[in-house]
Length: 102
Figure 1 (cartoon, helix red, strand yellow):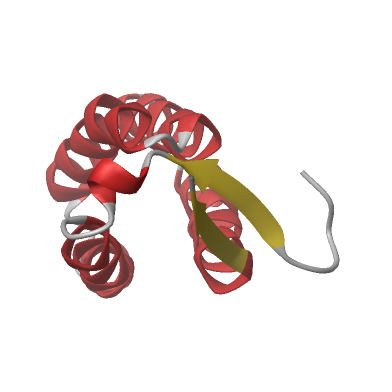
Figure 2 (cartoon, one colour):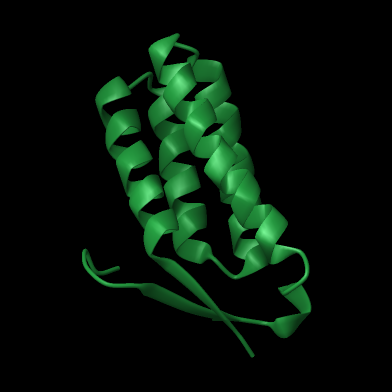
């Protein structure tokens, strides 16, 4: 995954109708994680990471799923430094993501 430019992902056109809701919910996750960091709610971060790890691949976004795996593991370890770093990675991924339907 490059640090600059778009992250262009080609996915099945069957997902076109549900992808906007999925992506909108991921943006909400970013806010939830930020709030959880502020309140030291590690369990919420772990749950969000776990769900992201499980769901992103189904939507054709394995790199996003890996961010979820890493986020969940960092929460289990209560590694706030890694959580903050992964939040930035997650945010950057979402900002650069460009979906192409085939």
